[in-house]
Length: 254
Ligand SMILES: Nc1ncnc2c1ncn2[C@@H]1O[C@H](COP(=O)(O)OP(=O)(O)OP(=O)(O)O)[C@@H](O)[C@H]1O
Image (cartoon, rainbow, N blue to C red):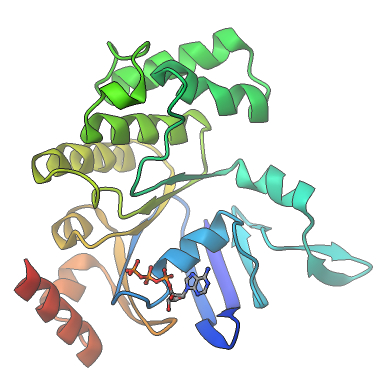
């Protein structure tokens, strides 16, 4: 579960998110679409606690991510608290962000050992299972640089899953891939979404993927959700003029 409650995020004088409210239910797959610069990645960065909000509160799994109660008041959470909470949230990035000097296996075991306290054996058993799941059972000892972009992205997905996240954030995960590798990665994510109870929040320009996999699509513009609906509804009969304009532009570009 994810909940944004009256969230404001500014960079200097530039207000990126304005009193933003939305909820993603447990196990739901929600996709954020909208024009460049509208604040979609900022939402993911806030959930990764890479940025601080200026007002409001964010909740993950029913607990507040950004604030703690002290003497009956909400105060911004400290770094130690944020580190704890961050463990429940996985993210897969556009650029894979694998550790280049580690084998594929170690890419998957490093964080579970360090942050979750798993033994090396436990972490390796989990990693081996996940590499099988993403179709890379034979690449455990390979180094990321020897893999294709699609394979590297599969490793990044497996690495995120190795932390058993409650929430998985996807940020344009296919943008850096060669076109022929996109479908395989999207199919993998679709299968994971269908077979786990992970809550997904996804930013993508792949409208077909958004249509295929999402329970709900949120159209975002200038720091606000201007329309949200199941994909069948939003893509076929968008009600907001900005959504219609955006979808037309996306189709024209394709
Ligand atoms: N670190 C930063 N410092 C200053 N401004 C920033 C910073 N990060 C983002 N912004 C600004 O915040 C706004 C929202 O950016 P964000 O990356 O969230 O948009 P987006 O909707 O994800 O765009 P895109 O689809 O192009 O990735 C933009 O105007 C951007 O220039």
